Amino acid sequence: MVELKFLKELPVRSLNKNPFIELSGADIYVDKNANRFAFFGFKNYVRSPMFSLYLVIKQYDSFGSFIRETKFSLPSIYVPVGSYVTEKPIRLADECEGCEVYIS
Image (tube, rainbow, N blue to C red; front, side):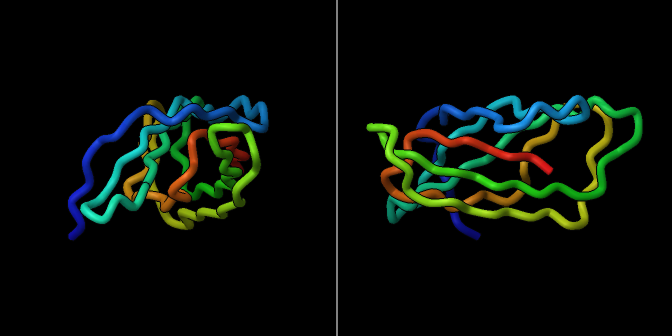
């Protein structure tokens, strides 16, 4: 198990307007080797639980230049109505200072 420490809040913007799930924020954490990871928070507005989540994350540096696109899939999760934070950290580029997220 890798120990992660909170670094700072990650500015994020949702690329889609989904009435059922909303991106509520993200935080950057670092490990002992200064590798960056993010945890993303969501709000589920559907009365029934969600059983999967697919994210396309576009990472940008402090100048707003595109770094890379990361795809992240949670094919079997259980998210009841309310708030949810990804349980697994998502690896970020070392120079990542902001993200755009498409939720499916």
